[in-house]
Length: 115
Length: 109
Image 1 (cartoon, rainbow over the protein chains, first blue to last red):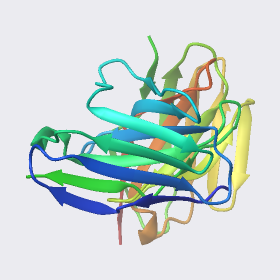
Image 2: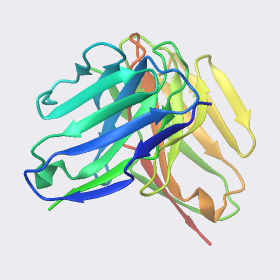
Image 3: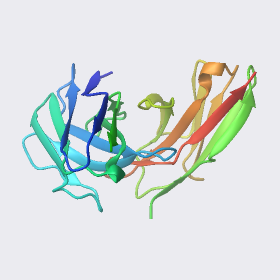
């Protein structure tokens, strides 16, 4: 399967600052990447679908101006949490997998803590 | 609407067998997934069913009944390392995964 990495694995930031999370597909050319958020003891919530070379598709209720997604190449997608607040503290996970693919491969996740 | 239901938590004994059930309602159906997630880690793929029946993979098996909108994950010869959350996810007609809240499995010695 595809190998997916995320950086950083853990980040602590002050309220009001912006944080960039990178998702890299190391051995799979990913035209589509998915960004999820997971709060403690809850399931994965799809935030957006990142499409290479075009604008991301955001799920209902997710602010696209707050969660900026850039998918500039087939191996890299970035999620920037702008003006982070404590309620944005969560586990952010990316995955790769084409729409017709019967599996998604997940990155190791990024734990964001906003003070 | 689309929905995935699974128990919140289950407890089992080391060496025993446990069955985690999942019922699903999706707009169209392109398969049912089971993922394992240890605390603080990303999910890892366990199984995929798109046809009715049982798929066996070592100590883990997964069953699907499309007519009943029902699946289960069967774990045999439980080991302490199997303590984790098990996520059921259905793939709808747009190939989007609809996730359940996960079942936390606690293994006791």
